[in-house]
Amino acid sequence: MFDVLGIAPTSDAKAIRRAYAAALKQIDQQTQQAAFEQLRTAYERALAWARHHHDQRPPGGSVQDRPEAETDAATEAEAKAEARKAVGSDAGPSAAAPVDFRMNQPQVKVHVQTHADGPENTRRMARQRTRAIERWVQALMQADATQLEDVWRQIQADPALLHLDAADEMSAALLHALAQRPEGRMQLYREASSRFGWNEATFQLPGRPGVPALVEQVEHDRALWRRHTRAYRKAHERVIKLLQNKPGPSWRQARRVAGHVHRMRNQVPLWFTLQVPPGRQEAYLEAAMRVPRYAWVLDTIITFVRNWWWLALILMVVLNGMSQDGGLKGLYQQATPEQKAQATGMKLSATAPDRKIDSRIKMSLETIRPNGDHVFLISDTVAPKNRNFAPKLIVPPVRYPFSSRFRDTEGQVVLGLQLSAAGVSDAWIVQSSGVGELDQGALWTLRGARTEGDFPPGGFMAEFTVTFTPPKKP
Image (cartoon, rainbow, N blue to C red; front, side):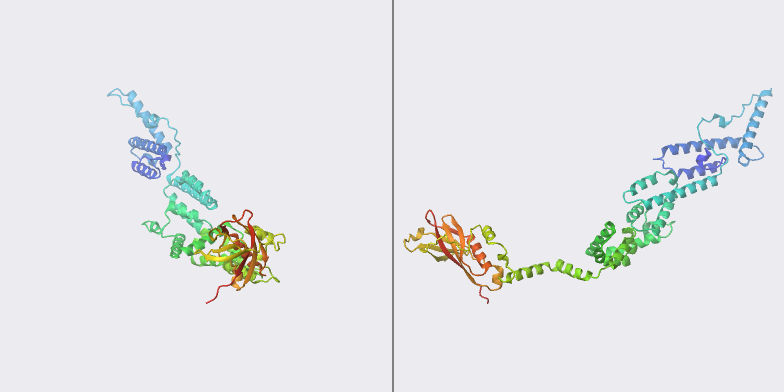
């Protein structure tokens, strides 16, 4: 019972109460019910034992001043003498023999170290607690982000850390370890800070030491980081993620983020070190120094393509459009005639010897509608028809190619058309303008043409002229 209280056997009730109060502070009565009942039983038995030995104390000295063996022997001798007197005496009532309290106690298996003293037991528990703290701090420093929660759960279940001073000792040991090796342990720092209260307000409470240098530096770096703009922080956070996910960078990546790394090393060194795994900062800075000789040429090309790609596209289009037939082919001349005809939905041929255009069919511009459509009246010079039912060809606005309009290129294209009530069913070039893109623009213009009026059942063939004239400049 006395080893549960953590003291040597004694009949001093005050010492027993002090030991019970000290041990009670280390037990949570709600979660450690069995330990509390064991402590309470030991406390009550110790008080009963102390009262019994106090009543049997001889006049020459106290029980606790003698060794335990001598006290037990004296108690037994006194009990036997009283029994003999009670048996041999004739006068007076018979005196009851003294009862040995230890013999009447219930048989509870409690191992009592009779020769162990309190200070030695306390030192032994302190050594066990120190070894447990060193072991768990090393486990926390070696665990990765996915293992931290399991390690913290095992620490809470360790019986060696139930002492009231264990939390402060664990906090101090973990702070010292983080100060020695802070690389990449931001998650461990945050969880330990929430568990042990690592902030300036907590460390400034009465009875606590000053704010540790590690906590003070982290709070200072965090305050500097929050003062920057959101765009500045997001740009540097992307660099931190790159350093966390890619241990071996290329020289181009290292050169791109070297400025961010230098700024964070100078402004928030401890906060940046806690975020990045060990060796990543040095690896990126060394890779940034290994730059090949052709690096400036590649950087110039990449920067130009990334920032000015739209200008390069415009130059390519203009140069391609300004090329002549003797040089590079224009955009409209890169496809074959068959491909152009397929794109326009019409049949195309440079010459049509088997197609005879009816020379009696004439076309004249009748009107221009508000939407820009040109209405051409188709007339037969030999057998004219009623004007109200005369066939008409409605042509949309001419599609002037961009490059030709940019160069102020003029031209006239004569097309042969197969006309019917369904529209323009066939088209071919009778006379080219000499510029492929103008010819193609004329075909694209006639693609959207439609017909109105009465047409013969088989239709007829007629010529149609498309003229390209650049707009007049003011």
